[in-house]
Length: 302
Image 1 (cartoon, rainbow, N blue to C red):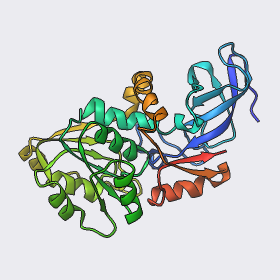
Image 2 (image 1 turned 30 degrees about the horizontal axis):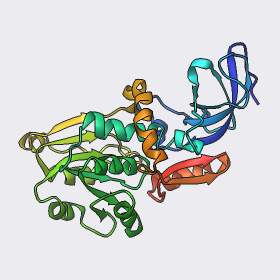
Image 3 (image 1 turned 30 degrees about the vertical axis):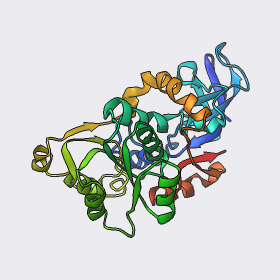
Image 4 (image 1 turned 90 degrees about the vertical axis):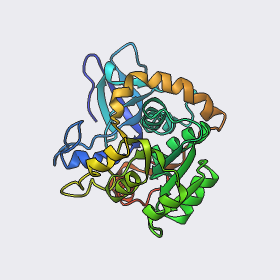
């Protein structure tokens, strides 16, 4: 167990968030830096204060921090954020009311500005970010078309997340189905996967369609990246393509929570959490996430 020094806080991990960007860190290609052999894997946690040498945090308090894949971590006060008592269960500070929810909200509400009547396509729709994005868009009156990896997940997208329809990418021709389900074109495509699905969506864009590039799930395990859609295609569609880095929206996290916490309390915004118990099982849970076997936001309960 590490010892906190002057001005430091010792925290014990309660919940660890597992996210696809970690694979990019392992490959040394993520904007936040690389993880090399011998390093502790990075990861956001909800942790409990065990010992505090600062006045702003007390023993027993729950905080959000980059605790990593370890039981204990030491931080200065500026690296910690208090988890509000009304966030229940506390794991929601990593999912629907955490970076997952912030990513979905920033992409769909602040960046794409989804409007009623628009056709919105969301791959990985039952995952952590996709499931929140679908609900936010449906609540705004958009027609959401999800893409998922099984019939069970597609049913969940329609029955629980408010999707108008859902494409099973494992058993259906995604591009052909997009053409049928979006006859007037896709107004907003929230890209969480890259690869062939991004290409299919861009070929089915409406004129002046918006593409929000957020994740590369289909690309992270590749040594090289699949080339993006031909510029001529995007020019012809008069498309607006935006890159989303959630860290840019961190200063607006409190604004996001103020808007979405009441929806969570009223069960108008929900998050299915795929919880694995025990930090020793984090690698297996991460493998399931990266192979698309998870169902919901992947979290490890320490």
